[in-house]
Figure 1 (cartoon, helix red, strand yellow):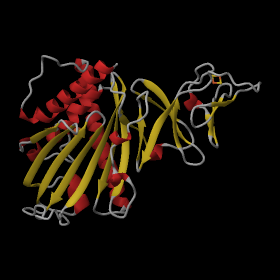
Figure 2 (cartoon, rainbow, N blue to C red):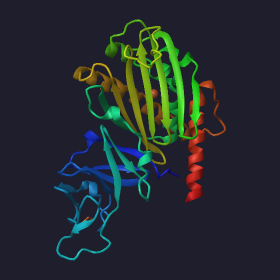
Figure 3 (tube, helix red, strand yellow):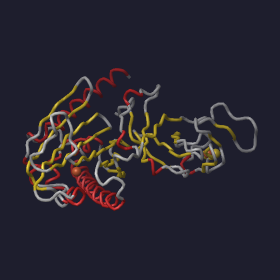
Figure 4 (cartoon, rainbow, N blue to C red):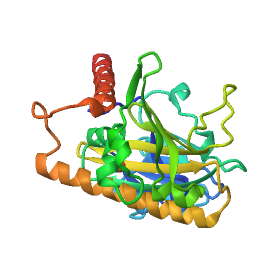
Length: 343
Ligand code: FES
Ligand SMILES: [Fe+2]
């Protein structure tokens, strides 16, 4: 079962060229493309004629032409031309999805009704500016969505799985605080590590050496949006009482968790930083490092899924580090229950 009345990341902005992209989201095949005028479009990836994937078609100006026999669709999914006759059958349209391009990410509304724009996450950091520089990427994982939720809500795994890049011993040993905000449907996990080793990921980019204060504050908005606020600062220099924190380095680490099928999930990521803004070398370094970190997660979750088919019910042993993940599971279960009661 999927939570459909939600926004999910469907693509990276840079993936969308005029050549269509095929993506399976919440079990549905979607063709995504950018029209000649720059509009981002998402249509059901199945031609009304014989079902050929529209993602194999060609974008010409503001229309998409099916690659099999040429049924032609506009950006709203309306069939505007068929070959060999003037009359267009009344049932020749395909579904179009609401999409919103917001900086580096393209969001899709998978619900059947009108989209709820109040639910669309605000990600101003992902929009190009003089204050933030960002990089992004995506991986597909052959493991269920909930394994990715578990993974991201418990960062103690950094110490072991990502020990060459972002993991240091203190990530696993520092206790977390968990806050569940039922009203706004967000799970927050705080881990403030003071006077700890600066891992290579941050040492190379911030120039900080030796010990630092390193904070990780997670906001998870179930189901599909996760934001980690990372703060790196010289030891003993917290934000000032008025909130000013200019002496620290900040990175926002975003994940878009988009179920593809029951047993696969897209792991969209983006990093935004308020230091070395506009530095291409740092962009390339972070892209490479983060892609490596994500690949380590991909490998681990794929192994977990293969070993146990993703189900550990009744066999898990949870400890304090799992409190964030367990809170996320509870919130998701309540959302599934509510969705089921409405369907
Ligand atoms: S299947 Fe698309 S035009 Fe025939
Ligand atoms: Fe990880």
